[in-house]
Image (cartoon, rainbow, N blue to C red):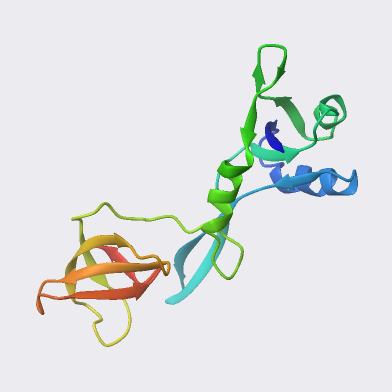
Length: 157
C-alpha cells in the first residue's frame, strides 16, 4: 500500500481530515506537541507537523480525493500522484507519544541545555540525543554523568 500527499487550503488540515474520514478514506495528519507557558503555568499545544499537507491512502480513486472540500491539489509524479511507501508513515507513527503526537528532537547533539523541572532543575548539560525509550539524554556538566529526562523538560541554555 502507498500514501499520496494532498495539499490543503491554509489552516484546513483538520477539516480535510474529517472530510476524508467521512468519505471512507484513511488520512494521516501528523501532529506534534509544543510546550508553552501561559500565566506561569506549563501547557501543551498541538500543532500540525506539516502545515497544509495531509497523507491519504486511497489507491485508484484520486479524483475523488482531489475534489474533497479543502484540498487544493495532490502532489504529482508526472500525471499520477507521487506515492510514499508505508515505511515512511510507519516511521512517523513509531515516534508517537501517549497523546498520538510525533515527538521530535528539539536540540542538536552537543547543544547546551538547562533542566526545567525535578531534582536537577536549573542544572546545565550537553544534549546527547533521544534514547530508544523516547527520553532525552543529557550529560550533566556539574556531575559529569548522563541523565535521561522526559521530553519537554529541557530548554536551550
